[in-house]
Image 1 (cartoon, helix red, strand yellow):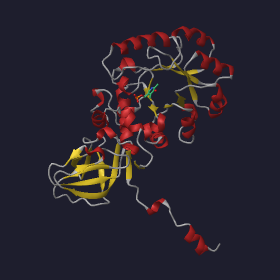
Image 2: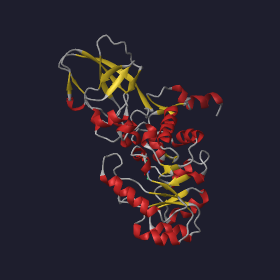
Image 3: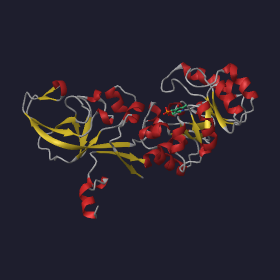
Image 4: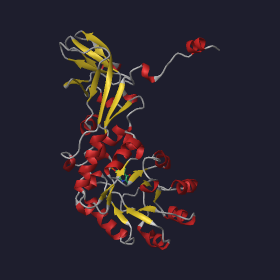
Length: 362
Ligand SMILES: *Cc1c(COP(=O)(O)O)cnc(C)c1O
């Protein structure tokens, strides 16, 4: 096949040839700022980072690399594949795998050198019998999700494992709840069996509960990414995620025109509307139908009609200068969008779709 022919048959479709209609601008500087602010709240205790689920959808390598440079030395993922993904960015021994280790993963775990967070007597036995290595230990203090039970502590202690961090997790740190103090006092009691291990109890919300909850190491996640699960954090935490979506059509509506699936919006007067290339397939919640906000050069625009899979419609002001092909800012302040949509900030971030082009601001 000569060169000319092959060019004809394979048109050049490199990604440089089109402009992605969706951009996810991720401010790594804001993530570092948030980490530093949380560190500042934590006095002498070390500040780690939860980077599970691809750093809550924002890119675990980019986030971890930035935080490593800032001084973070403890990274938390959920799956072994996520620990592997960080190879080359973070030394394996600084990664904890929260979901623990099963028989099928033991060899892999030891080869990789990341720490399993042992969650049960069974896992502790498995780790000991397979020759062990440095690990972490989760103790359940009342959430009844992951963690060993109090009555297994003595047995596990007798194994003589090399336990770096002993941790537990609060169920209601984002609420004013008596459960927090109950879990704290359980943790103080249970963790005392491991006097040489580092102690860790606090996620983002628990950091704001004060120094009693901070121990040797904290494990913030959502607050790094702009979430403020407690009011105390609002002034310290910066927004991190700034999505933009392209307008693919602008149309004029007459009074009485109905808009979108199931006609949930009717124009009460003549108006213009922009059709924007973002939908629930991109993680833009369908529950933001007739309520979500966009911005055009700082001016707020409201969603009209149903959010559909690939498209959302917004009302434009009179005399707008918007053109097809322009980009709108999607209002994505986490607490606001969470309130409007009825979904948690965690769900919103981790549901962001794969059609976004991630653009990192450093
Ligand atoms: C996800 C997770 C965290 C981080 O929690 P945030 O609420 O996002 O700060 C900390 N610890 C454990 C065990 C977790 O599973």
